Amino acid sequence: MCYLKTFDPTVPMTYFLCVMSICVFTVNPYLQLCAMTGGIIFLVCIKKKRSLKLLALCALVMAVMALTNPLFVHRGMTELFYVANQPYTLEALLYGLSLGCSISCLLIWFSIWSELITQDEILAVFGKRMPKTALVISMILGFIPKLHSKYISLLHAWYAGGGSRRKSLKRTALIFTACLAYEAEQVIDISLSMKARGYGLKNRTYSHKRHFRKKDAAALAFSLGLCITCYILIGSSRLDYWYYPRLSPEGFDALGVGSYFLLCLSPMYFIIKEKLLWRYCPAAS
Amino acid sequence: MKARVVSLCVFLLCIPAVCVIGMLFFKERSVSFSCISVVVLMLGAYLYVYEKKRSPAAELVIIALMSALSVLGRIVFAFLPSLKPCSAIIILTAIYFGKETGFMVGAFTALVSNFYFGQGGWTPFQMLAWGLTGYFAGMLGKWLVKNRFLLLAYGAVIGVFFSLLMDLYTCLWTDGKIIFSRYLALISAAAWVTVSYAVSNVIFLALFMQPMGRIFDRLRVKYAIGIYPPEGENNNES
Image (cartoon, rainbow over all chains, first blue to last red; front, side, top):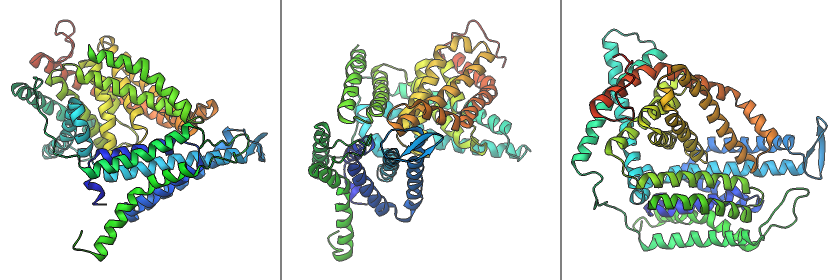
């Protein structure tokens, strides 16, 4: 977990994009199973008990999607029974399960993403390319706590003036707009001082604290290589799978599924290595 | 100039290319892949064009302040079930500061509030939906600022529009294509949310219309920020 955080933030971002772009849009159950397994193991490793709630939610989503999909889609050969004169088919049920699986994969991988990648790291990546956007986002993140503390102090002033203690829409709106009125002028002062210090002039420099090291390049090349292999195999229809009218008998390609499985499980290498080092060789870690 | 060329390239080349790639690679879910990529590309192109334009520092800080304020509104008004002031704040900002500021405030509100409430595949859609809320409000600003009933009606309509767009996203996400019966089922399941968006827009627009108008008028008179020249209506008595 700590070791994973030592990478340059572009590496985990690219990795997550590689994994998610495949698992969300494919209908191949083998690939989805890989993403699901990798995601669940990874999530449980880094979030421990806190992951149970999300996993329960995912199970619920999958069950609901699987059971409701045949009510809307009536394709497929194997009819199980009839609901309101429309067939309820096994293929639609399984297709619903696969839909639920891709939504759950998305939830799980995004949860891992938000655990590993912080706001600062996102800003560090985009700050160089899009300075204005990064500036605005970091200003927003700074203004929120400032506005909140202003709101609290105005609320206390309201109490001190003998205002009612009951929460109401009118009171909150009043204090909220007072907050805006106070901060708006302050903020214009900020903009004037920005202007005075040469905002928007040419030759502005930008300091970047992180270095892109060899290990980052290796990890990046590893995940991109596996991802591109998968994409080529998907493009050459060797990983095609279909549910209608009958479940397809093929769709299992050892190279494609194997490389995607490796891609999904690769972070485990660092986690296991770190655990072993802590346990057996404290001096080396 | 260069920015305009790039955005044209995005619209004329990248978007069709993405659609074709989606069809080649993900046959069953090509529609959802294409839609989501198109939304992301549109946002990217807009941000890029904005990035290259010269904009005064005051505009940037106003964008940051109003986005922060609408995120704060989501936190402060959390005691009211399912009433959110975000759209109302975005609309009012757009009316007084122009359509581009409105778009940026909407997009950043969605992006930053999802730092607090959870990022996901819905973030780009939410950014686009709120951005368009602001953009249209800025386009219609001339009329909305004069007629308060028009403003309230606009709030209600845009709330419904926002909800429909998010339902479309859910529909695309679950099916990979638009099955109309499922879309209708989703809309009827989310009817309560749609109504609450419309109602909260109307309530918060009615509440904030006068005080915020006064604050923005003051900024315009004191610092010359905002789009309406001071001549003409000045009936927001202070």
